[in-house]
Image 1 (cartoon, rainbow, N blue to C red):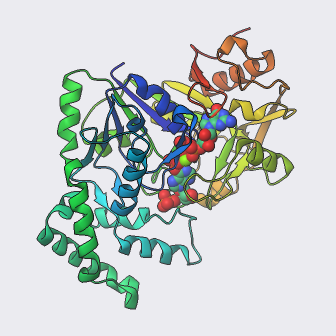
Image 2 (cartoon, rainbow, N blue to C red):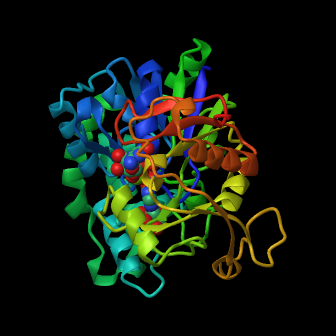
Image 3 (spheres, rainbow, N blue to C red):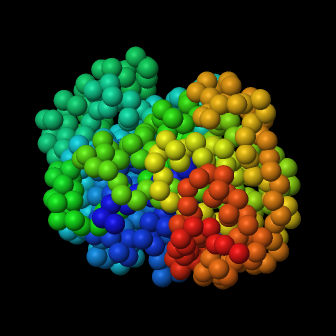
Length: 421
Ligand code: GDP
Ligand code: IMO
Ligand code: MG
């Protein structure tokens, strides 16, 4: 299949990075199309951990070209640190990394604005990477773009425009053009070899039928429109975000939606199947559920199949990837959310107060005792695990295509649907 996407179906951290890493061995191009340094994608190339924030995970495969497309927001200081770290690990990026000249730039002002906003009463629990203010500036048409970092006059103009609008929010703490322009230009100069019109590169690649993987960040429930607004990120995380974010029109052939076998969330906002008890703590400890970007403990709960079915429909998911199945071993009975009390609609409420009031209805399924972390084929899973997967697949109505039972590269396998028998 020439075009594939890996998208999160929950509130992020589903194990997207690990799966992108597995699939990139056979890809020509890996494209990040939204988000920025708020992402934290954990991978274990050659058994040693690395966490990618801005860089597409394909950087860990020497035959793969990596694109940071125009839908992204980029903090040049953190990106340069990441490039340094990845190159120090032996993955040279020269001629393998392309950064869109139209991507939005996060400046120190955006970091301050994110901090100011989060210090208030209506905080979202952001990663404080300046994501919201950077996207706001783009849509307010006062943003700085990668191309501006390469031209002193353009940058001065762009910074002045943004400061003029933002000053009323920042008061005395508003920065000056002089305080920001020097370091930004210097970083622009270092990033210059990578900056390109990436939409053109991709359109050429599509014409040549190259294999392209679109790497999603965050998850469907954090989508700025369709997610649990206002407790969301500021970008389009669904498949519909790919064309505009990547900068081309195309239908993606294979949309792989990733879900943990349970569910987590970081930051504020409703989470109907959250477990504030010993089971939630056990999931956190067994699953190592601490943020890859901020280190915050992740909130944990049962998988919500009702929400999963909804986001699969609106994102056109063609295959499910179920990760962290190993974490559920020896858990006793397992619950899965199949609806909400008194809620008879096929979708989810748009109003956050109604969403927050949802009380889940569970189905209880038998668990399994066996350690499955060494299993490498769907048919070798215990019978109860296979039944669990089958229930999940039938409820959601999308075939399971990948199963993951550990953080390592080799700890996932393809399957043509939930294993039978
Ligand atoms: P991403 O943001 O979707 O790429 O996911 P994160 O990297 O933030 O979080 C997923 C965490 O789970 C990482 O620590 C991975 O190493 C780990 N992980 C991924 N898949 C599995 C799995 O199948 N089993 C276990 N036990 N850990 C996994
Ligand atoms: P990956 O790609 C989990 C959450 C934050 C907060 C909300 C808004 O690793 O799955 P932002 O900084 O984007 O303005 O924060 O979104 N969030 C994530 N949660 N994984 C992520 O990325 C996230 N990126 C943002 O915790 O609730
Ligand atoms: Mg993550």
